[in-house]
Each structure stands twice: as C-alpha cells, then as structure tokens.
Image (cartoon, rainbow, N blue to C red):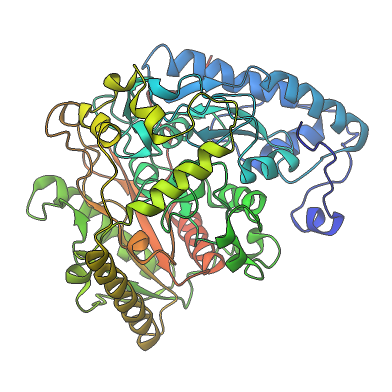
Length: 529
C-alpha cells in the first residue's frame, strides 16, 4: 500500500500559487477544458474553478492515447496503461472536494519509462523476457510522486534493456510524432514521444549516456538529467551503484519540469549517492524561474563537434547547425553575454578514454532483482535461460546475456577515471576563467535518424549525440526546444552547468523558453474533436 496520508507544507503550497481548499466560484465558461499543451498550473486552476476533475483529465489523455498511440499515426509510445488510473483519479477528486489539493502534483497524470518500478504494473524493460515482471514496490521517486498527488498513467516504450534506440520485442517500434518515418531517439523515447503528442502532462525518463536529452531534443520537449545525488535510483534498472544512470523529469514546459523535479528529489537510504544531495535543494525549484534570467548571464558557446558518429560535413548536420546559429543570436537578443566560442582543452581526446566497469552493472542488477523476491527472475542466469531471450532486438542484445559478463579491465578503467577527473577540472576552470553561468551546445548534432536505418544492420541510431555530461558524471544538463530544421524536425539547445547548478540552468532555460516560445505540438496528433 502506498502512503496516502500526504502532508504538504502550507507555506510551500502558497509560494507556488496553490490554494489550500477547493474553489467555490461557479464556472461560467461551459467550453470543455482543452488538454492540448496544458500545464500543471492550468490544470490546478481548472480544478479550482470547477471546470475540470482529475477523472475527466485522465479520461481525456486515455482518449488521446487510444486515438493516436494505438490507432491513427500509431505512435506506439505506451507499453502499459494503469488499470487503476481512473480509480486513483476518483479518490483524488473526493479528497479535493473535502480538503483541496493534497500536494504539488495533485491529479497530474505522469507517464513513466518502463525501466522504473511502479507497484501493481509490470516493468518490462521493453523486452518479452520481462513481460510478466511485476515489482511489489514503487521506485523511491515514484512513491514520492504519488505522495505529492500524482497519478501514474502508464509506462512508456524504451530501447530494449534501456540501451540504444526505442525498438523492443515487447512493443515493436515507436514513431516520431513529427515524422512517422523517423525514430524518437532513446532510450527514453516513449516518454519524449508521448509528451510531444500530449498523452500526459509530464513524464519520467532515465539517462545513462544521453537517454533523457536526446529524445527530448528529437521530440521538441524539455528535459533534465539531474546531478547524481538529487534523485534516487532505487527501484530502477541499472541503478545504484552505476555512476552514470540517472532518473530525470521531462515536460513540455520548463515550469512543469521544475515542479516535477520538486516531487522527485530527496534522500533515499537505498541509494547512498543521494547523501550527496542533502543540503543541495533550497525550497522549490520554481523559485529560480525568471523570464529575464538571461539578462547579464554569461553563456559560453561550445561549437566543437562532440557527438557520437557525427558527420560535420553532411547536409543533415548542417541543418541542425543552422538552427543552433539562430539560437546563439536569440541568447544575445535576450540579454546574455555570449562568449563564442569557448574552447575546452583536450575535450575530444579525454572523451575518447571512456570505459565502463561491468562490476557496477552486475552489482546493480542484483540489487534491482532483489527488490522483487517473488519473481522467477532472480539472476543474470535466469535472463539468459529465458525462452523469450531470442526475441530481443536488435538480435545482438541477446548475446550480452548468453555470454558471461566481461571482466573488468582495471588499467583501462583507471585511465578513464583519470581522464574524467582531468576533464572535470578543465571544464570547471574554463567556466571559472570566463566567469560563465553555463555552457550551451546542440542537444543532438543530427536530425532524428530514419527508423529504417535503426532496424536494419548496422542498426544506426546514435548519430550526433553528445555524452560529455555523463562522462563527467557529476554535472547538470538540461535541454529545451530551440526550433525546427528546414525538414520541420525539432531541435533542442542544451544548457550545461556545474554540479548541482540545477537552479541556474532552470532559470536560464526558462528565460530562453519564454523569450522564444519554440515548443509546437506535432500535427500528427491534433486536438480531438
């Protein structure tokens, strides 16, 4: 059972403009509430006016999912819907009628990447191997969201085993709402596509290399990969002690992103890294939002191409580069002092020394599976023995389970740790020497790749993805919509900052968003009649 006795400080609610009791005014506007591009604040205002209930909101999203995710354009971004979502909404409506909002996210539908546990629902990892895997407990941040009043609407598609692009044996292919022949990116592609198509108010993703930022950039939404220590990974595949895997918020607006982050942060004894986050959160992240936040801000522009498999001379690369050129001009117009370019010594050479510690993954796998003692899957060997393993996509993913885990190359991993430390201090020094508030770069250096390229050998899907923030581990990085290419495909700009600089990044990204208003819904999923 989830803790339903939600206690939220009245001062914090007041600071966010949230009333403590339901509104009494009669609603004179008889037009139905429009969920397209709606925000948390608009939803709460509609609750207060009597124009909307949580049940009506959930049903509206379910109607859109039925119309556009499973039919019509067949975006295919949802693996599982919560059978009890309407019941949860009814319960919250009853509480609201009695005493008002229960928390910062009261009645807000949330979609969750399907590698994160939501009690009562499967966590499939996009693979048939885990189709019946039902964890008994929520992941720590999911429990926090429920206690803040959120409604878990469903689970979104992802790359199989949360590695790569958004294709999997459990669901097939997820299509980009802006071009149905292109990918949504990965591995949090379902969350990005669902937000772009207005299937929920907000969503949760996870990033190990670029899995929160890439699908956000390619689906025209905002996302944040928080500094490790702010958001727990317990109850998440590839969680602690992985140094890089990190859960994070995704939304159509920066304010909704900040509100969602408010509901996720906190110390969790199951994830010792969250001990680093104690004292790093000072009230609501919405306090940082300032539409004039770019005025006088010093922004460094990283122009060096650092995307995986980027092709700087290609037409595809040039189309994204042209949008970024305009983005730099927009920063200047908003009052930022732009240092263009900034140069980070040895950046590519140091990034090339990345290496993994397979022992971390194995330890994380054991911790994750141990949270579900009644499951028949208790070990790596159980995954390897599954008759469903052969259905994994791409087929090469089955090999990682059939074969023993690779041994740790201690010398190579030590070399990576030394490179990571050198680059971290180099970046911090560059920022200090130039008195920078943040660094900006292209979220992805290429347009979304064609699905055809990703489902056929050599399964190309990572082209153009910068991963330096996860190389450094302890860094903050967020993306916000920054326009469209001449092919009408969305592009994002990334604000990169020091460890635990989320308030600064949110301020800058909010100011950019409010100045430019680049977010636009996908035409494949218009408002329902």
